[in-house]
Image 1 (cartoon, one colour):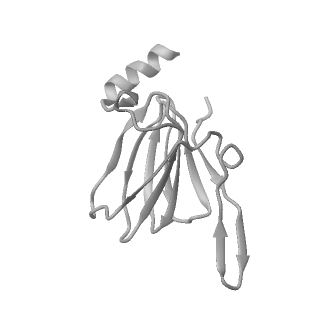
Image 2 (image 1 turned 135 degrees about the horizontal axis):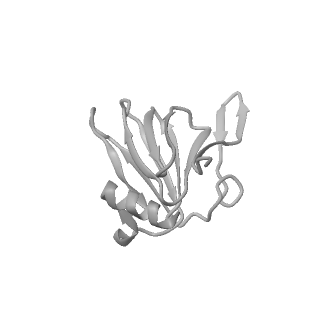
Length: 136
């Protein structure tokens, strides 16, 4: 089975004043954006994530600095080093993720397909794997 998560190359407009990258919902990312948030000032050695979403889709961009994203959809595991603001990582629902190795002054921008709902989270890896196995 091919992983559902993937890197997406975003458009870049270059000129002598600098670069501009934009993201359009349903054009560059395969969902409508309901919520935007960002992770920043993450202390060295800290880890974020450690969960999967039951229905929510997300798109992550390293708008400053860099970090590593480790993904597991129950079949495929893959890690990505995000360090360029013109690439984003699409995460469909039911993908376990951890984010670590944050560089100094890094900012992880996250666009989400829905509003925050604690009921949408799998926070226990074994429960996540059981849900994946039930869906096969």
